[in-house]
Length: 558
Image (cartoon, rainbow, N blue to C red; front, side):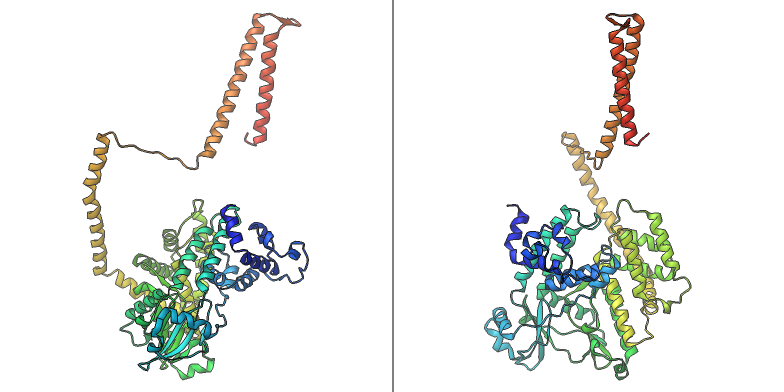
């Protein structure tokens, strides 16, 4: 039994459930691609009871399938919703609607895990734990508690058995990805196995609450000097990989605000604080909250924003921060050359990329905004259209950039909810100008020049040793150069075909010339006074010539 078959039957019930959900939502054709018909219910295999098939659009049906399959698949869909370089826009929009709200389990099911993680210290740490969950999600649920010292806290507790369920689903997804790659289910430019590996890594990071704890601590350090941006304090001594204990922040989530509630807070100031804090995270810290939707933002004291839920964070290097600042500035100034160069520099470009067509598409896109004022430009639409161009040309941008685009788009939506006059493009332009001015200051340029000189010196310093090693190997006769050719098989076939045709042509010419000489010389034996060998030579030359002409016409190359 090969690996795929073995893995299938290890998780028979789960494959059976997947098959049933595919058929229910009109995706039975996927069972052919992934060889899953053997797991489908008998009546479904016989073609009966098919009245429940969903007739809605394919992206919607796939979204429903992911929701029905549970947490792991919902997380996969959410990851894919941040990758407009590999999925068409209609799938991206639909997958962004995936919800991670799951009814919480009873406290009695959670309590053993809590005691396992904290041991006998539970009664020593908490004076009270609320049995009813405050919120539930696919991986964890939230319970309020009170420490013996009197502080109100919230506990993020991992669902019992969720790690094992996710591990099983990941094995199934890996298996399906292997089959999709082998059977060319998806276009070649989509690295399905690479995407699954990336998803697997991010999901296991999310299962480790200590990583989230360090994310919160790093975020708090970055905003330690800011009065209007905060996040919960964490209790590291009470936390573990499956339990995270945090300060409870008193306030109202932005998702709970009604239009009339804007009057009770300084809405325009909060919109400014939210945008400025995110731009600082992106352009200065290089470490940003990748999901700043209204449910993850709490308004404290009417003028302060508190970020919560640090499971999904983005990180962007200093050089990429500079590139993004230049890209943003180039978009606002409609500089096609700079936009094209930056996309080609940061992206993974296919070999058959048509750069001229890419430039024309970017130019058409840019000049559709030619007569618009900055305050009339919608950031979300702007970057969605840019992402469509990237998708059409099969350019793969780093995931961090898509997380960044998404975070800024969400931030624009939050700002508009608070202040209808808010526009992140006009606000961002001032911030980007300040950043670029700072990055291009003499001190920073001198610093970068110094780094360049150091790298040059480091390489130069190592050069004599490297050269000495090469010369020593050359002297000892140990130096060998290996040439490796790739993708020359087709050329080899064409050269082989051409040489064969040339050889046959030469044989035909030789037969004709030799037969002519035999006939001219009158060499016996004869048939009807014609030398037999001469006649045989002409006949062979005629047959070979006819075959050669037919083969040339059939190839279409003449």
